[in-house]
Image (cartoon, rainbow, N blue to C red; front, side, top):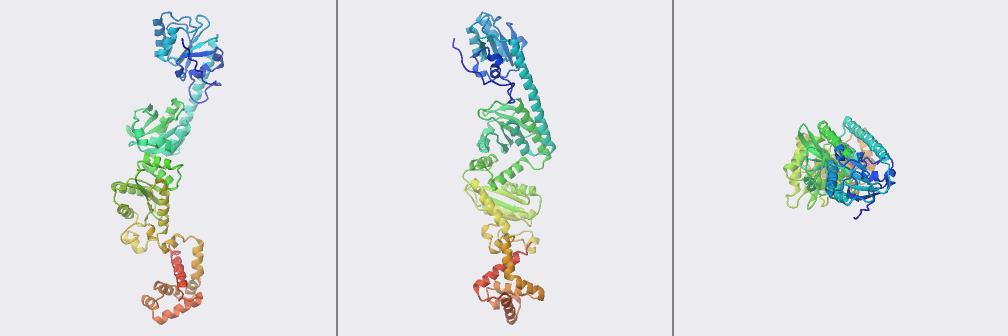
Length: 557
């Protein structure tokens, strides 16, 4: 006979302490059994079977007294001689689900019977021999104490799981909170997806978002969904449906970690409570999973908060955004103080879907909604689509500013497009009353959105109006004229503006201002006296022109 010398697991103290049930390997490592010099001669690969109880027996049909999960201890005295009856003895133990058979080689046998070894190997039932006498009653007492202790501990842990999710629900936590709590409690990566296999929220544990979400849709479609929580699919995912009153909204998935323990009852409890919390969150929160997921992904892309370029691509792809052979463009709609970003989010999403442009849409900040467009080389230029988008946004938000950033070729570079679009939006001057009442603020007569090429000196000064250096320059340059106009009720600033706008042509300036040439000359002389400068200097005129622009934009709202 060939013996299996596979060693048992490392010793444990008291109980497993890891939230998992006591296993055959754990029991064999206990000092009370280790003193008998246990040796595994069959079923060594199944030492991870849980031990739920210990049963001492000298019967030839012990299976009739078992319920499954028992460690069966015997001296071997009642074992039959005939191989057929030995096989039946082992078959009954295997059929009932006994954890293992332990036989003492002290009284009747000094080596395990060949028929018994063959039968246990055939049924993959762990067979353990003891070379020395062991007090079976003491084994029973120790193991039962550990089993009951584990059960009590498991009850406490389950109670804590329920309490944690109840607290989440009571404080109105969103889906991302529930997914994060599940990952923290289980130590596994948890993903929430919708019905079309878009990964809405992912909380990694012991891995990365890239590891979890790469090729997500393909892997997800290979994993079926049942009506209950169970391990499914080729990847061994623990899957729980998320539904309410028979309507399924999606599912929450717990991913196995390489080399980690199998999913246990507590993992099932965590996932089921997660599914329940998600159902409540979906009913309570007006924002859909999809909107919330797009919003979170956009903020991370715009803020470059991903750990790696691969993570950014994996997360975007899991939400349905193409990540190969396309360019990316950021579009911002700044509502200039108007609320209700969710309505704008929905509008942008609908318009982009109607245009057939894959995109992520979401509110980046209060009053600022964004879209990240994935542009295919074979599609029409983006300007027509953005113009349509801008017109739709301005129709419901007449005072809004629509801006675009630069095109980029890689998703991780999209943050640059967002930054440029934001700089453009900050530089757009407020619409004059006539444009506002017309209902649309246009960047140029033929388009309703703004881009970097539309930003001139006046817009740049407007964007920088909060800089005290700009404020100081305007006041130092023009303050004496403004003070004079205020004290003497003159209009020298207007005269200076007419002169500078006419590029120093006094005749044109007088005509535009409805002034006689003599009056214009007198006023310009007063300006030169107050400023102590010669207006015939081209450089000085340029300085004054910039100062006037700054002076004007500093008085805009």
